[in-house]
Length: 107
Image: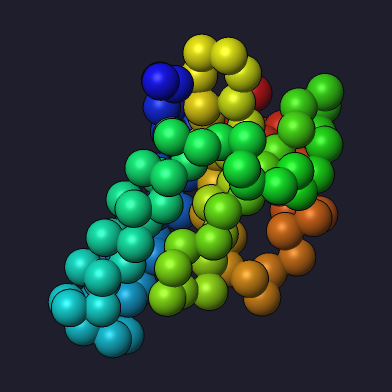
């Protein structure tokens, strides 16, 4: 099984969405988002290649997996050993242009 690493950007995004859901929709919805996020991460960990390639950036293939019941997807990359969870974006965002610049800023 792969080791999972969460980038600083991924952690900031997760916290932002949890707090936003809690403020706008209440604690139960925020907890449902957390559960969906954890289930998505578990799936990615077991089946990373089942997620389609979304974009190639800097020699890496970034894949995505939608968080069930929410308009957000997890963006990640992986090799033989490690899965790096890079970001979470809402579907309404221009992910194709944001992901490369956000990932470049982390390096």
